[in-house]
Length: 111
Length: 115
Image 1 (tube, rainbow over the protein chains, first blue to last red):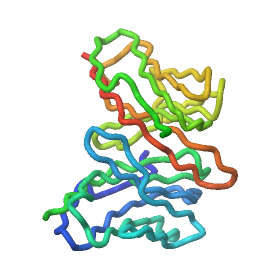
Image 2: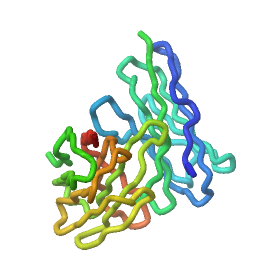
Image 3: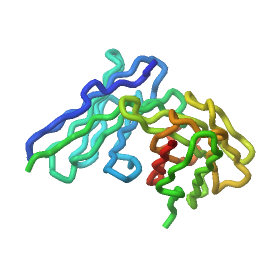
């Protein structure tokens, strides 16, 4: 059973607007969360992380929000740029070293 | 610069053959992982290792094996390739941190087709 779910397989956003990617998880023992970005024919690259002691982490245009009670996290990209077009995976872990990945959301930023 | 490399990048094989995918990292990381990526499933963990001579099964380990004889390499072997093992395979490594979160660094992937 999928412990980490990304229910939107794809998302299209206009350049300059906000992109919001969502992720839900089922295991209340998860304390560590990562977002990865993946371009075609490349491996995933680390984007941003958050641990359960925080509810928000910001890095430039990227912000991750964590709602532990709802078992939900989201990635906000503001402003969105065409170069952000990629597949985004969220991942969660209870131990910090073994992660469960979601199915990914394909983001297209339209110029 | 430190990196993690996978070879080959593409492989076509026949059912029943033994196949080995290579993964080599120069980060000097203790932890190494193998994943497969399939449509609708995301990345699923096959095997992982926390150090030399240590190997562990992941959620989809049937039909696969790994060995860790040094820090740099974690080859993935398909004992008898099956069409269900057609997939894109990713290797990753991470540094062990006490009480913290380990960021995993991924290779570029190997696309395997089993005919």
